[in-house]
Image (tube, rainbow over all chains, first blue to last red; front, top):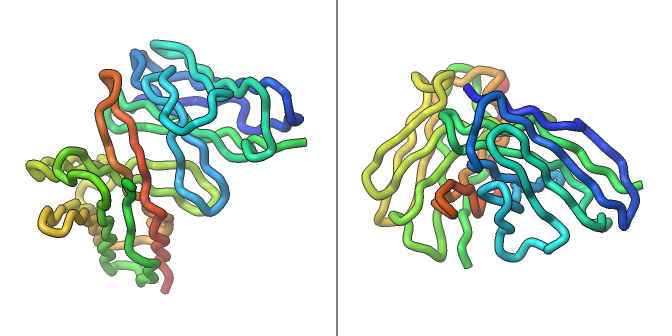
Length: 107
Length: 121
């Protein structure tokens, strides 16, 4: 199985900050990498697909980059509603594995 | 509006079976796959498997392969996930998600609201 490792596991940032979350794959996943946002008690919501494509309806402050094994999710200017847990997911290998999640809190 | 509507919460005893449904609304059911993902309390996301409504092809997580069966009813645009011989570690929220191709890769969107399955004696 392809292992997905996110860092940090949690972080706290202020409104307006630029926030970066990283995801590393144990082997190349090309660009088969998605990012999801999950708020408490809710289903995950797709933010980024194919490593860098913004899902329709997602605010442009979210962006993704990377390829092969190293990927980044960036929030350019943090908003209060961005408080959530973020997961990366690879869909290149089977099974389709997820990172362990990064919990983002607003100071 | 594209959405997936799941069945309600279940409480089952160890050794029993559970069948969760996922009704697709607002799109052509046979044009996309349905994936199932579960999340144990306070934990991360675990891929359970996938089914193609167009031809019934399935793929399951190896650790659940002998206990899980996914099916679809194209007449009602509904997908089902049955898990047998339940153990305490199966306690989780089970999500269905539409799996589609995009930019040469795959994405899971949208997701159902989730179905809580509690295994308790």
